[in-house]
Amino acid sequence: MAEICIEAQIEKIGEVLDFFAPMIEHLPPKIKSYIGIMIDEIVSNIIYFGYDENHGLITVSMNVNSEITLEFEDDGMHFNPLEVSDPDVDIPTEERDPGGLGIFLVKKLSDAVYYQRKNQKNYLTVIKKIN
Image: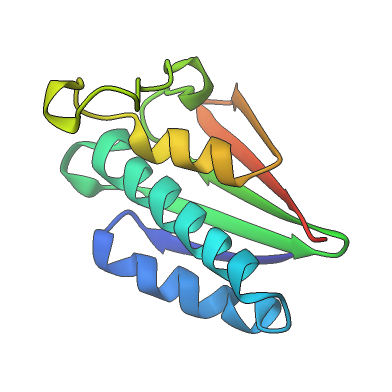
């Protein structure tokens, strides 16, 4: 499993994507796109909502075999994204409550998402099957 640790700063997301690009370059374009979207959405949510003043570290790990396993670890504020209700995407955008679309998208693009809080840290695991 490959791992990168970044400071919780939005400009660092590109470093995460670049770091994992060689691991998924052989995959179909659609899968690569899904992985990029999921990393971007999860890391940006951790940065924007997990820390005051964007202080902290985020560790992202990836394992690629018959499926892709992404693991996100941060010591930001406790937040279980699986407890967030899915937005009602059938109503017009301007009538929806803000937020929640990124997590909704991750849940739709992945095959499984798991969360746990342990030792004052958030752990989010996302699995995407390769077929």
